[in-house]
Image 1 (cartoon, helix red, strand yellow):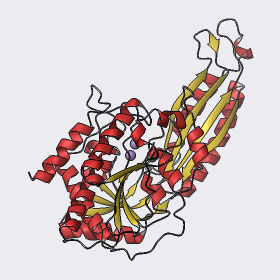
Image 2 (cartoon, protein in one colour; image 1 turned 30 degrees about the vertical axis):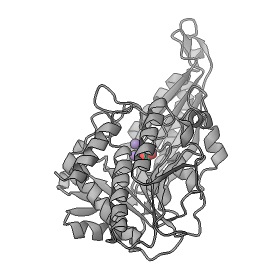
Image 3 (tube, helix red, strand yellow; image 1 turned 180 degrees about the vertical axis):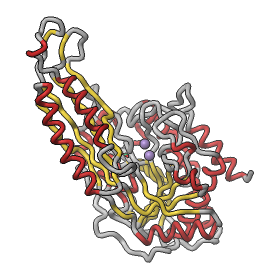
Image 4 (cartoon, protein in one colour; image 1 turned 90 degrees about the vertical axis):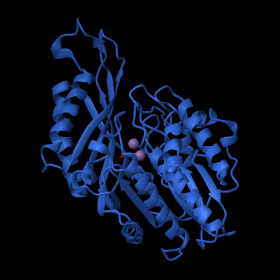
Length: 425
Ligand code: GLV
Ligand code: MN
Ligand code: MN
């Protein structure tokens, strides 16, 4: 094993120690002590490797290095926050891979092997996961102008703590040390697949060409609070019963379509007053629909609305659906896909174009700048679970691939052009 490989695996093991769980995963939701500890460690890593750390107002953590004064930046990264009781790879792998790729390209620039036309920056996007604070991809949504900063900062977690307060609890040096945000001209990200396609087809790397569409709703079921024992069955307006009917309907919805066309989940539930002797007056849930076909999402919602009307009648409750976050079935920029493919070819890695089912910060970035999104295999496709795993050789191959991509981007393999809508910067 080369020194570079050894260093990457050692750093990854160190990083995975923050918020480590007994089952071999991590638990570091956005803005928690574990997230802040990881961020501090990462800030030190950046400084030790020649990058200048800066943090914007929504907590996106950048490490920049100026190679050509005034030139726009190639930005690479992912996210260090995690779901509760999650795996070590989701997001964190991509941030560390970006850091190592950037450090390698920086060394090549310094030794004269690579002649850059762009500057270089690494990013840890704040709150990609959206578990503690919704929506997901918060930091990159603010950066790309899709979500207002004030709305993001005012978002509360279930305990009523705002994003602004959670960020404030971080270490002082992380805040607004900004020498100015990087002016981004291209973006690249690498992530574990979180699916089984690469593994099942024996393919080493994936070049993401499209994303599945997603729609997320807040479902509110309103009933009436009353005594569990003394209220006659015919008098009940049980919000939790209404919620149960919706949960079951959401699951049945997927079976209305060809296998693989629709993924549905109710993934979160809050019940008021949540007392053993009181019928619930309100239940609030998150409903998550995904499809590789936007028309399927529309048809699914038409059916679900009929079913929720039936659920309202049966449970004598009122059910409302509010769209909270969505994205369409969108292509990644062809020029980015081409750079990914050429890089995999050059390195002799078996590769395929692949869709992403999960959302990523690149889902936002691709809308404002040419973007390259890369996948490496996930064992058994397990994700958002402590058992999430990617083999070391696959992880190292991914770093090599990302390094090649960054080399090409820094040398302007994509014709230098700046986005007109680089909104957040
Ligand atoms: C990611 O944030 C997702 O919602 O897939
Ligand atoms: Mn992720
Ligand atoms: Mn995730």
